[in-house]
Length: 65
Image (cartoon, rainbow, N blue to C red; front, side, top):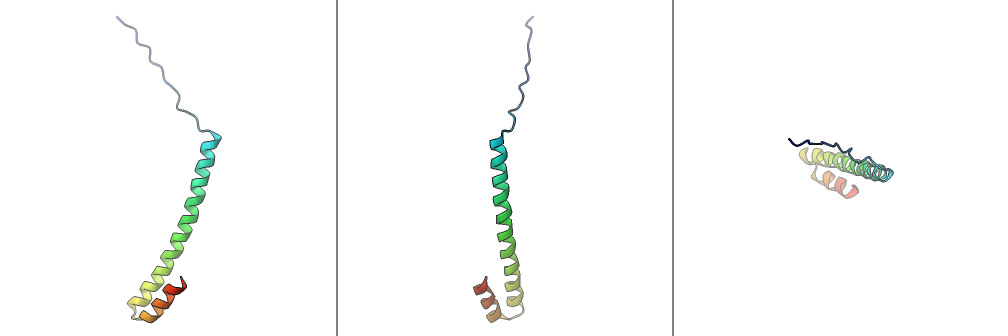
């Protein structure tokens, strides 16, 4: 009969470098979300103007975005 020894290895702990990387990614994500949200709001205005038949106003709105 053979004895089997099972060892459990601890997963590697997070280092300060990992925390810095995650903070940097999170910061970049927040900036990107603000930009995309602003663009979405502008496009909603353009869509509303276009749907209402105000093509000229919608074109002017695009040039200001």
